[in-house]
Length: 189
Image 1 (cartoon, helix red, strand yellow):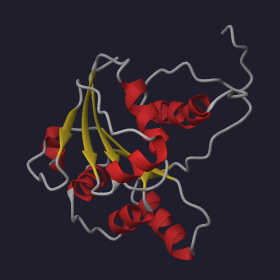
Image 2: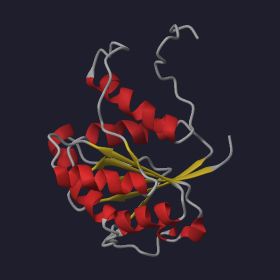
Image 3: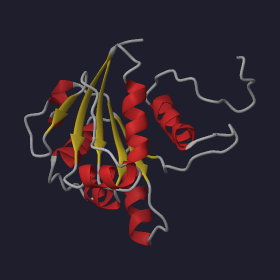
């Protein structure tokens, strides 16, 4: 596997378990660089939902949300992937309208303009027409809208396994091999 550079942005949307599971899974891939940026509300939502403080794996570098000198604020740093997990509708709306008012939205703008892979893991329901139009705009610009919709056919037995049905799909989009349940394959394959 070639070395990959990945940005993970965590917003204040509900769904902190997905971010936690994604970060944990990414630690098992030695040949990646991961930069992390948190929204202002991400730590509060994480604490509320998971009853713990955010713990970013030590091999990942955390950047302040106002640090426009972060490498992934420029296309020249060649970060190929960005995952916003979870992605709030406010963040999605700013990306759709080209408003780069923090490092997350600036990095997303860079990823899209460089024709690289932006994955927005939305976790909101119901959706308004504004949300749907923003998702359409980001999709037309080359982004991937990935609703945090867990699957049940692998028969998850706990919250982590349920969340993994989403995070393993994120790994698929990043081109990273995971041990995900594959439809039509036996567990031994």
